[in-house]
Length: 138
Image (cartoon, rainbow, N blue to C red; front, side, top):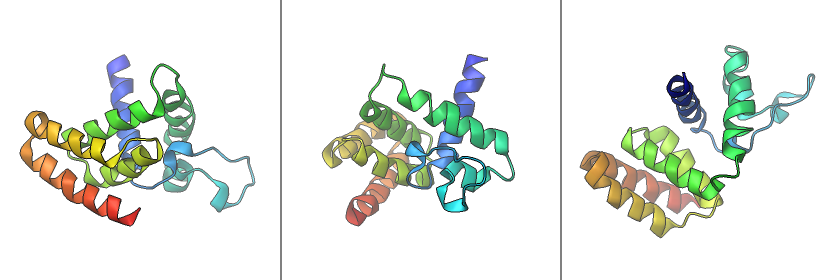
């Protein structure tokens, strides 16, 4: 069950990470306008309200806030996982979040280089192209 929940949370992270600001999202009070709703609520709240709630409350409200790992470390781990499983849309967002959480460009490029030997050369080459775009837009 723990493995299934972990996979569900990673999948939710990858789905939502395509849009910046998800990691800091909060669930709005009833009656709030659309602009104050979390990214999870905006993306899937009308269709999958429970998944949006779990994303806000469990993934970002609990897991990302646990003190055993810093947000910086969580970002680096997430970036590495997204490179390894080749999720370019989510990688784009999490590279930006990693920068906000204190991971340097040099550390991100070194992570990509290191992963070329563990996650595959094509994944690393794709990640470099995405990183180049993300870094240029900052």
